[in-house]
Image (cartoon, rainbow, N blue to C red; front, side, top):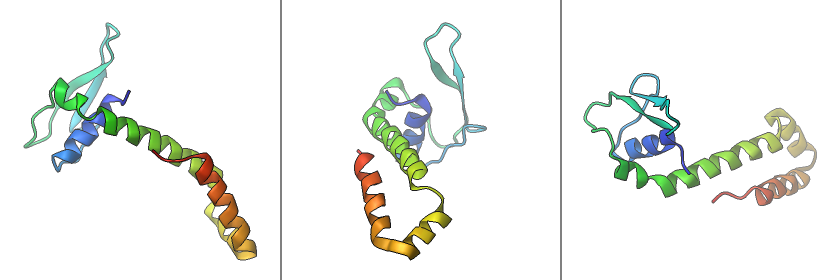
Length: 109
């Protein structure tokens, strides 16, 4: 299930707006365990989304969050850019093989 912040970010992007979660939109966890909710909405020219509008972002949000996890895993496996450049200089084909194996092991949605 996509996080509330991801769904809000996608809702804003779909309406040509950007969101800053330190001033535009403030989220808070509900004390009764129902999860986060929008405490404050300060995006000029865009109404606070309804539950249905946020739910419409669920599938895209799940894909985005999955891909972000894959990107982070790949980034860690790739290693330092300086070391990669050295590896490319020494044997570009070996580097290509290593990078392809990382991508194959961590496919994006």
